[in-house]
Length: 103
Image (tube, rainbow, N blue to C red; front, side, top):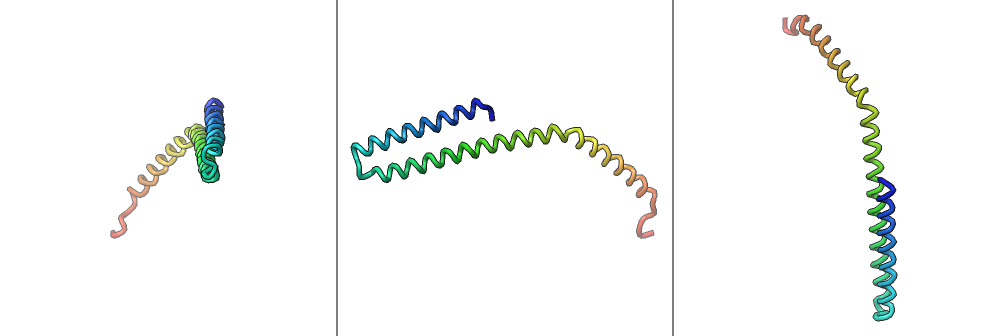
């Protein structure tokens, strides 16, 4: 994940937190009996948002690792396939000349 996306996620999270503080302040002024419920709700929303951000970040890191492994093993895999095909052809040539089991 680019630093640009990290910055966007961080800014969005802080904007969400600032809006949450403003909402709690307004609820505390106009409806003090609902403040505890609103604080709990906002805590849950912020927790879900941070969990989602971390999850998406780690998925991006995992995709980078997978791409790196694909790039590093591309040549080795093709060499292994060629060697496998060569050995399979040798085995088939030898088995093709051998007598059948029921003879």
